[in-house]
Amino acid sequence: MTVAPIYNVSRIADTCDRAFQAFCDDMVDMFSVNMHCRRQKVDIQAAGDLLSHFEKLAAVHLVKGKGVLDGTFHLLFDQGGLFALSGVFVMLAESRIREEAERGSLEDAENLKDAAREVGNLLIGSWERVFHDECDGHSHFLKTRTFIGKPWDDPSKIGLQADTDVFVGLYEMTMEPYPSFNCAVLFPRTILDGVESGEPLGAVETASAAHMDTEEPADDPAGDEIPVPETKAQDAQPQLASAPTEELPPESVPTGPLDDATQSEAGAKAETAEVSTPGAPDLARVDAAHIGSGPQRQSGALAELLRTPVARIMEPDVIWAEPDEPVRDVIAKMQQRNAGYVLVGREGLLEGLVSNSNIQGAVSLYLRPMFAKWRRPQDDATLEVKIKWIMSHPVRTIRPDTTLVAMIENMRRYGGRCLPVVDEQGAVQGIVTAFDVLLRILEADSSVSWEGRSPQAPALLI
Image 1 (cartoon, rainbow, N blue to C red):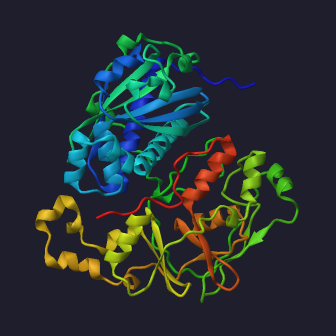
Image 2 (cartoon, rainbow, N blue to C red; image 1 turned 180 degrees about the vertical axis):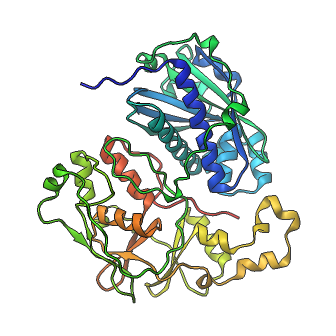
Image 3 (cartoon, rainbow, N blue to C red; image 1 turned 120 degrees about the vertical axis):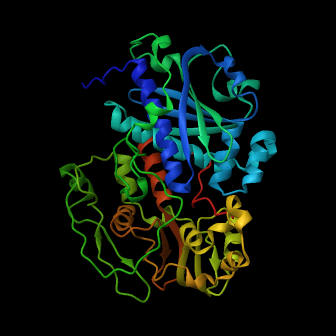
């Protein structure tokens, strides 16, 4: 039996530093914000003593850990962090974010509930990556729930009591141009039973900004493969928007067996699926028993999931726009439905795909609130551009009976984070995104569902 290595509290605290900073780095990559994090202190104290740092509203993400940290712990953002991070995710006006960060109500926070959950998903993904890289014996983290409100009014709502002893890592996070805010990690004493105390907590020095800034930046997840993990299901991050789809010639997909167990499980005759582009030659067939480049064993549930047809996980409720619609109207549709993708066409005939990245690349930078004082009439004119001039086309599509493993391989090789699902007549049945795939893999691997998930990326707001 393999015994997981023992880590002292000081090392866990240092790893938490890098995990929070990795989250900041991911926010920088996604939203081009200037963001960093500084540890204020680590200590063991009663949960109720945190009231002075989180006396207003807070976002509390409950995380189930396995491996080095085995049990449920908490990641918190105070009111400033709740509104600043969620507001940036959906690109609210700077003035509104500042106002709500200072005086926002619970009703205001409820309006940003979905965005707050997405912030939590990104945060846990960043933590997962750092702990996976740095802690032998780490299995995985999974966010099980997000609480928004005043946790200390009734700590039992987040699984704590006011007198519960917790290991607290308190941090100050800065995201310009907004005021700094507090965030924290809370480990109940029971979760540290397998961690040696090492140095006394009082001897764990407060990390300086210079110390944290010397760490190597986290890898940009934008180009990562979608993994087929055993238990490390969050090694890759869901992307907010798909990259524009390029027209590529048919190409054979090299195959390489995962391992003997996987081959025997898949059967001697592997399932195949066609991935096609309307009006263009079909792309190569993909062997459903082969994906990735190294041996990775799959649990029975995960192996079964990989043979699932995409029709069972696709989102059938898609949004359409006509080619001559202006960008302004398409943005409004994305806002109304909190959608990250819009299909372009007439009478159900698919002509193109528009994502957040297409929109961001088309409209003027000076439409963003932070540059509003330099806004000119020609900047507003970019909102009137017809959507057909910025959409991705032709669109790579898949059939409803395409297996999930074939879809993953297609995304891995050809890029893109959204694939429309069409029947034999070319009629659109739905869409599947990389985020859908990642969530399903997590559920199959852990038997725990993420609550509050969205089938598409958060919508772009200008």
